[in-house]
Length: 271
Image 1 (cartoon, rainbow, N blue to C red):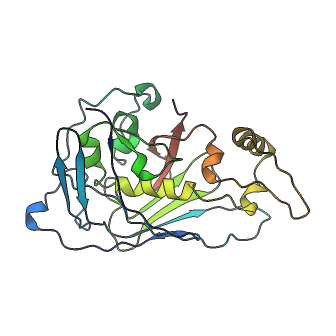
Image 2 (image 1 turned 180 degrees about the horizontal axis):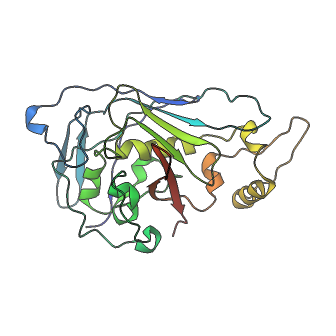
């Protein structure tokens, strides 16, 4: 079976930090089955998957709300203005937590056989065996390599489940601060959606001017633009995703040693 596409419905408006609000409604008792070990009782949602020989359709109800913000500390610059966005997150109900012993070996060289950390969901640690996420594209463009990978989206991103995650990347300024608004744990889908949404925003001047000249040159070479400068300290229109240059493939998350709830984002070149 080839890759599958998941088609959520999203609406949003932008300011900063990012806040996501969605409504929930109680699920039926027949649909409530706990997928060990990544299960959290605070989450309520319901989905039905319909399969045919050539297609998969999903009826979804939105998950709990959570808040995402990106914090940075550019020296000698003014505080950045708030930025907000609202989207319903796509989630699929998992009947059970499937075994990953027979996982696809696709792009294993990028996953580099990292030892599984019990604090991070296995799919987020080695995503290229389960799905292909180009962080420069919308969530609905994710390629799922198996039906199981669609089920994993509903699992909590960490174990034990957490309502707070801080995500950093060596190629990006600042950190992503992902927080649940109502105490519900953050799901795998929530992490991926948060990354895609925030990476799509424009880089602010206060962030651009404090970057090293080497970083700016690398980004400008990638997007084929030249910084014209100007009396107002002008800079080209650049999104955060442009700072990754060609390395926009989501290659996983790993727990950062010595920092509670802090995780390192890994990316890889698109192939």
